[in-house]
Every structure is written in C-alpha cells, then in structure tokens.
Length: 272
Picture 1 (cartoon, rainbow, N blue to C red):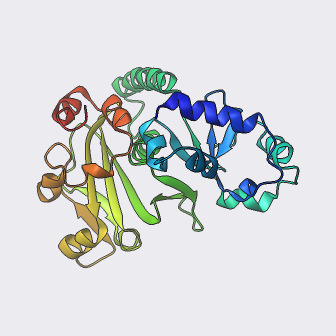
Picture 2 (cartoon, rainbow, N blue to C red):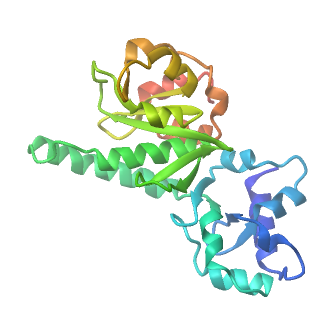
Picture 3 (cartoon, rainbow, N blue to C red):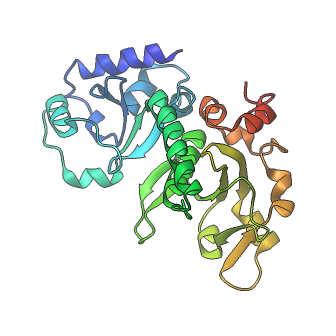
C-alpha cells in the first residue's frame, strides 16, 4: 500500500455519486492532494485490506477539526455526492484528514525565525508565547496523530489520541527553566496523557516528553493547583533518553523533519 493508491481511491470516490449509500453518515473525511477531492474514511477502510487510520498518519496526513480546516466547497460537494442537504449541525462532530504543504511550512518557519531574530536583537520582541505555543501544538498533533476538537470551555481546543484526552504543553527556549514546565493540575487530571514539546528559539523541536497523566499526579502532585515538571525529574522520559512512549509516534517523518539537528541525531537510531 502506498500514498498513490490512497490518492487514487479518493479521486475515484469523488468522481462518482453515492446517494444510495450510508457514507453521508461518516464524520471523518480524507482530502486528496488537490484539496478538492474527498472520501470518507469508512470508504478507504472498506477498500483497503488491513488499512487503518494510522497508515494515513504515517503518510503525513494531519487530523483537523472541520472548524479549523474546511475543504473548498465542501457543502456543495457533499450535497452533490449524496443528493441530500448538508446539515450545519454535523460540523461539530466532523474532522478532516489532509496532507499539509510541508515544504511551504518549513520555508515559512525558516523565514519566521529570521524575523524573530531581528526583533530579539533589537529588544523589540521579549515574549514569543503565542506563535511557539500554537506551532508546538501543531507539532504534537502532527507527530502523534492527535485529533483537535473545539473545547466546550474557554481554553480553545482539546486534543485526543483515539478516545483518550491529551494535555499538550509547549516550552519555548534553548534551555528549560529551573522551575520546570508549568501545568495545571486540573487539566492533567482530566487527561490520560501529557505531552511536553520543547521548542528551541529557532522554532525547531529540541526535545519531546510523553507522560502518563496518572504518573504525573502520583509523582509530582502536591498542594496547590499547579505542577512543575522539572528536567531532572522527568528527563529519563525524554525521547532522546527513552523509547517508552515512542510507539505513540504516528508520523516519524514529521518528527525527524521538524527536529533540531542535535535532537534528530539522537533519534536517528529509532526513527529512520
């Protein structure tokens, strides 16, 4: 099985009408490389023996909520394919799998880093929280095949690995704070896993740590509402030191591509 076969099936589905099927009930759609052809995940699962959603992650597909990524003319496409009206209420449960333009993203990261460096040197930029945090969350989503869903609270989006909630924390800097990475205890308690993405100042990944939430609560939970994950205490679980959770990686290519050269060399033995 290869990406070309998946692309062929997506185009095949889009070229025919499916009004007499139940595919309109599917809430996960896979987008072809042209950005217009689509197929429900259920169709691909039926057509390809032994095929799973993990294969899409391995081929570089990223899982986005419909609210974050809406394929061009999706509503018209849906109504044409299934000969039925598209219900707006369906948007909340729908997700999209698509392959991002990695070259454009990589070029943009290099450009952004150059701009950030100028602003830092001129003492204009002191806090780059918003961009690094969103980029780090995107890294986590891409690497681990996380689903990103609009949160019912005010905190933005929640992340899921299968049906298990994941708390994603991003630390930006070439070195960690002695105090550690700060996480809210309540959010860790609500999740099954906690992923910490360490991003260097050049916006590339310098380390990854994947922890079980119950381990964090049992090991580090004290008084108060905040937990600090310090490098000396969780360093043995860094991807550069441990392979305990490396099986959770769905997109090895993305992990290696967006890692700093030093980090990539440490991972090379496990992710080639």
